[in-house]
Image 1 (tube, rainbow, N blue to C red):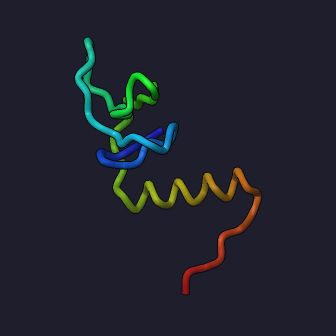
Image 2: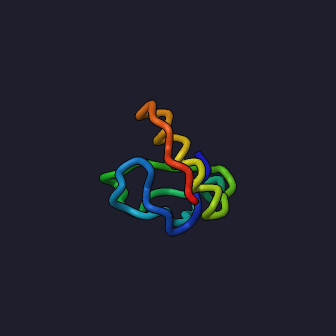
Length: 70
């Protein structure tokens, strides 16, 4: 899953995403570690792209359509 720095963690919804240095490479993870083990090695998305993805995921999970913004 692509994430951006400072975004609310998509796994625990408590922590925020921070950049970390791993043994072999940098990665993005939840600052709520060790209570949350979310990690992503993908390139961060823009904030708008993240909002769009979260909306699409909500629609998929809840099997509803979102009302158009006018």
